[in-house]
Image 1 (tube, rainbow over the protein chains, first blue to last red):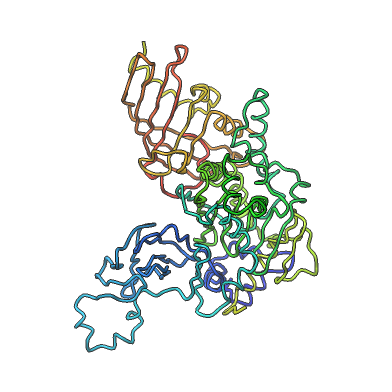
Image 2 (image 1 turned 60 degrees about the vertical axis):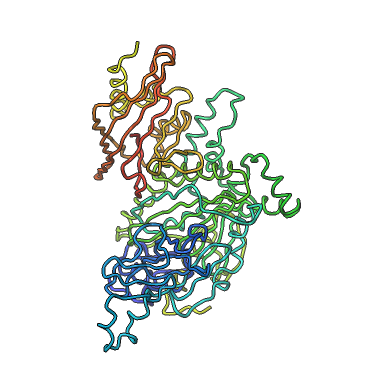
Length: 436
Length: 158
């Protein structure tokens, strides 16, 4: 059915949501234009482009962009199309453009801020009104870019909510991840795992804070890991993978006691008091480095914060305690690219990166048993949501009629509050313009 | 005395055990410190500080094998099936004194579940070692021709 902004917004109710936000191509198009236009979307990390001309290509929503390091050290995010015929200018996932981007079709070239450097046979435009054309602006920069502790975010809408207003206190999760480096700096490391999902990206976002699924859906993987481990002779040294798998089998009560935090604009996290990442073995030498860098009290404060998943609306999530970040890139209503990125804590032991890579490989890769468990559920839902007998999805667990989209609150850990928080944010950003 | 034909036969038999889902027998082919490695990038040399699609020791392989037959393994309801088409393996190195051997084989591999069938192509390298008179896998390295592509689920073994 044809949708517009008001009818799309009506798909979100307080405690249930219409399946068309997961299945309808029309809703998807509106969502890409408005929700992903008005929100601040994660683009990439500054460590991916250390030198002038270094670039990565990616998407914000479905919009192709290129993030590039300029000669003055700043970072530009440009729409990745030639203003002439629309050809994608930068084609590799990452590379170096030198001082200029050059379109491979007609050799129009652009400075690293997107402005036109040269066009072959300029005299052909001399007596035209080219200077007033859209093309004369070069590769269009996205409207707003903000770099926060090397994390690069972009907002496509020319006018809209500011970066600080959008994220507010939720940046504390990002801060915690960076603060875990003794020198306060992260570097992307270890490659990127790319996992194709035939489901809507919001299913992944909602699953992040769904603490009532691990002991059910992951019994096959985490439960088996625990069962196999229990057959090992007593005294066998703890296997690092078992340390990663076992907490997925925590009880409802355990997850409930961990807590959920919500912030305005759809951000939130699981694991407030403690989390599935709290009880990993210490890495020799790391704590001492942190104490030397920060003093004992601050080092403890940083390392005792073990948030589970922080969901950054609309499509990014991070795990501070293990320096992992995932982006759920929407491709179509029923197709999503999941990218798992990992970071080195600059100045900390390599063992931390090794553990992070193992976590991503076991949990978030196309070859991960835990990933197989989850994707099976998403794809079954993506198919079965076409059942017209009931077109609503229930998000009612621990609903409190006093909830508002602007709440900052800590609740019990098995609530569906953060899912409602994201859906309310979706409704808010499904608008022509969102300024606050 | 291990002949080249023994080594070639071992590699083909290993693929057949996977295709016939005789996973317990397959696991038994690995040395206790054996590894199954599928790199994430071409020519990858570091499995520790660069990620891989698989870098499993025998315990992790056992967890996968147990999981595949689990009653609550919903991603295997219904089950996946797979098929190897192997080029004749080449013996690349042999050292009878130490009992260490290396083979190389190109393959096509199909994994299928429900109505989906996915084709993968690559090269498998076996590092084999003679233990108590039996050949065991020290390292099976599988390099996919498109190792850096995005993939859907890969649930079985190449």
